[in-house]
Length: 334
Image 1: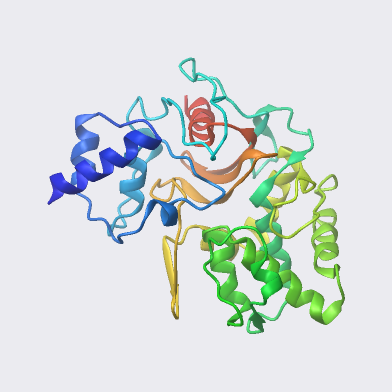
Image 2: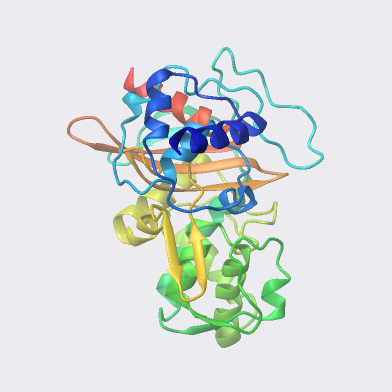
C-alpha cells in the first residue's frame, strides 16, 4: 500500500514540480499515511497552483503531527524546474539553477528589532493579491461581532473564485468565515464579511476601516481597494507588510494560528490548508497570494535560532515562491 501511495504521489508531482529523489526522503514519504483523499483542485487553492515537490505535499497531508526542521530538508529541495502555471500562461519561469531570487521585491525582517536582514526594493509599491486577507481578518475581528450570522448572498457568490465552496443563502458566523478566508483564501468569505459590515454601517465602510487600520499601525503606504486582493489596486510594500505581520502577531495572534490549521470542518464544510510549510517546525503562520498582475506573493513567519527569534519573509512578484522563501531562510541560517 505504501508503494502504491508513493507511486501516485510521484506521478502527480512529475506533472507539476520537481521530484524529490533522495532515499531518505522516499522513506519519509512512504511512512506517512495520507489523512484525506482530495483532488488536485482541492489541494491547490486558485491563488496558489505551485509547489516544490511531492515531498512537500505528502508531508503536509499526513496524520502525524511530527515536524521537521528547515535544516533537515534535503540539499536539493529548493532546486526548481518549471512550476505549474495558470492556463494560457507562457513559459516565463526563470532558470533557477543559480539559485537567484525571482521576486521583484522582498524582505526578511527581524520582528524584534524591525531590521531587514535581507531586502530588495522593500519600499516599492506592488499589488499584494491575497495577502490582503490578513488585513480583512484583522478588521473583521475588531469590527464585527464574532457570532454575527453572515448571509451568503448571490452578490457574494459572484465574486471570482470558489475555494470556500460556500452556498447561496446559507448563514455562517463571522468567526467561522475566518477559516475559509485564511486557510483556502476564499474570496467569497472576504466579500461576505465586507458586505455584512457595510449592510449595517454603509456601503464602502469596511474598506475604509481596512485603510484606516493600515494607517493606524504604521503601514502608511498601503492601500486597499477590495477585501479579497483580486484588485490590482490593492497595493503595499514588503516593508509595510512586515509592519502588518508584526502588529497581527503581537495583537491578534489567533489570525496566524488559523493559517496553521491543516483542516477544519464546520457543519457540511471541510477546508484543507494547501500551504506548503505547515510541517516545518520553524513556520508559525503566513498567507500566500496570486493574481496575474501580482504574480505570486507571500508573507511567512519563522522562529529561528536559539533562543528563537521571529522573522517575517515577504515576497512580492515572485515566480518561484517556495524556493525564494527557502533561499532567504538558508541565507540567514548560513
